[in-house]
Length: 223
Ligand code: AMP
Image: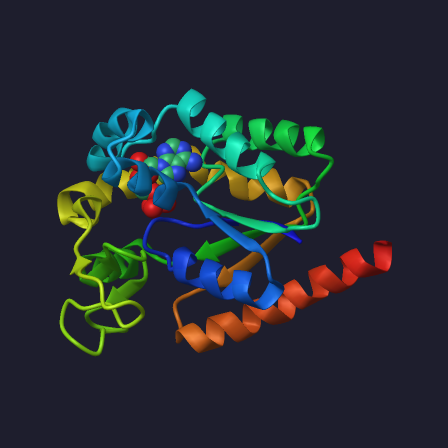
């Protein structure tokens, strides 16, 4: 299975992405995580990306597309993937289509996570991320067992610079302008699977898995 997941920042797509990858045994490729890894390691790519990320702006396409192309070409032929945070523009979606054609792959579903802006702002204020493994918590809805300590690996939790209120509104505006047109883009290609994430995480997950099981079943029937 080859999936992408779309949704505004703070819609919970990262958490859902991890669960989806576990269920369908596919590789989680998050462009935000790849950038943060490069920033932490102070690579050339990280140095290039950091100022855009801190402002909540998009990293230029030539850098981002190259990074994704490299990562996808490293997958084993029978290994599926879920792209989280890519594509974020129509140009990136076109570039992805070309990369996948060259790799003889196709997208099975574009998962669209929906959530209202006011809920998002509240959630991002409370989000804390592990510096070590990237696991995500929320002080209000999904707190860690020990304050500022990751349940998964014991790493230190932090409040992402770009989750602070000044940057959140820019990230939401960037999403509305650049990324939301992709909903229609994938609807037109008949692979859009939309899910509302306003309810309890387990409910969203269960409803999404029903939809994705149908997608995987259809793909199996085609083979
Ligand atoms: P995320 O963790 O997905 O919210 O991404 C964090 C930040 O990384 C974004 O606000 C952008 O600055 C940058 N970023 C991640 N994915 C992309 C992408 N596909 N295109 C451009 N910039 C990206």
